Image (cartoon, rainbow, N blue to C red; front, side):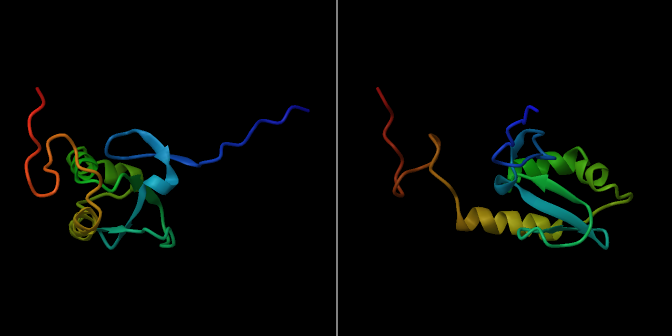
Length: 112
């Protein structure tokens, strides 16, 4: 009998950018009383959708109304708590500076 190797990381699809990523990189979101709630510990009951915790993926998911389809919920969903949670996470962990961001409070000199 041939055994297939099990993948080391469980993969899920982000409802915002539609890219597959390890479950540890994504934020689980559930709908409770027509409100989208972040579930960072993956403990809340109900069906969950996964999202990269970035404003870009959140905006894309809201624009495409992806949460309603993924969570199988009809009607308008309030994204207030989810938006605050992602904005707060970005404020705590801005990540490495990109080429357009400043370094050390000053603008990076242009490369020649």
